[in-house]
Image (cartoon, rainbow, N blue to C red; front, side):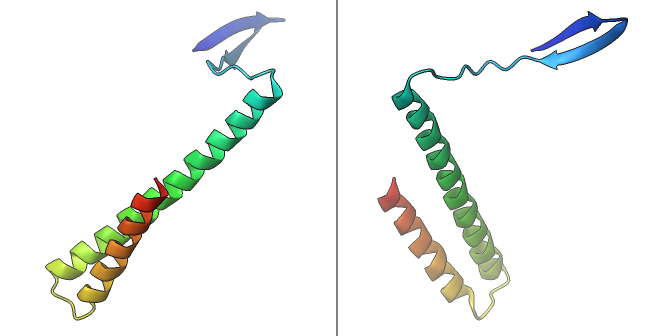
Length: 84
């Protein structure tokens, strides 16, 4: 949500964030922990998508190293499943 405020003849735009900060110490730790988990998960998803894309293009082009790329993509998928 964007709010417009007139200050001394100048219209200033302020963006209001819907997110509220926690006041309890354990809640603050939960926010930090969830942020770290979200970043870790996004990194894993990115790595998996990249490896799967590489292996699919190698299979479509019938490259010689396609088997290795499929093997690494499969290994990453297995690791991601055990992390979840």
